[in-house]
Image (cartoon, rainbow, N blue to C red; front, side):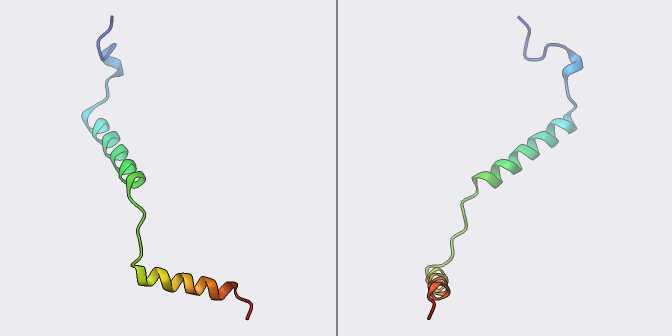
Length: 57
């Protein structure tokens, strides 16, 4: 049975490994970041504007 690295030609250098880890970390942070919430008062004002836009009068 082969070890974690089958042969040395498959190894990547430390700099490349760090770049991959950083990129994966950034993507995880972006995808796991919670959606920003507006303060309740601003949310109510936006709903009021939406309601007025829909109202034909």
